[in-house]
Image 1: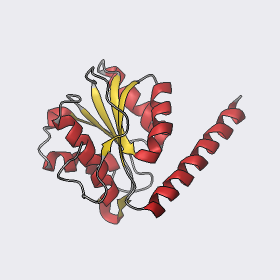
Image 2 (image 1 turned 90 degrees about the vertical axis):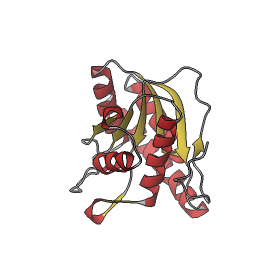
Image 3 (image 1 turned 90 degrees about the horizontal axis):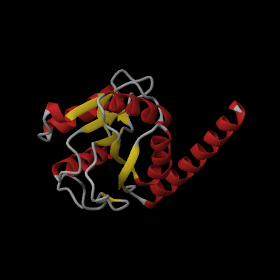
Length: 180
């Protein structure tokens, strides 16, 4: 699956086949913003993939998730604005601007979606991030019926993403052990 809004050098594709059953929502996970709330190219690519899935009918709702830590602008607000610019109606957009990490993305998104009677999602993020993110969203009580990932823009960035995800996985394991 390709979207004309994405660079040809790094097309976004479904990382795993989507189930035949339609999802309730597409959950797009935020990432880096530049100073002043400007969207990074990576964020633009992730949002464009979520919009492409929405346009193809994967789900009637897009939830943009991301607070952005200590920044003054929440990632989800910038993501919503990008979706609006692409023609996605406000009635199809939901934002979660409080989360600062993947664990919180999952917990807060699940709370919002359960509140409106939704639980089946397609998860959109960087490819390397999807396995860990999918586990967290399932643990939060959502049914992940499909994933779609944006590949890294270079081999160097792909290698860095794999290292980051491995370290994040280890941090999660240590946190769980510390709690028990």
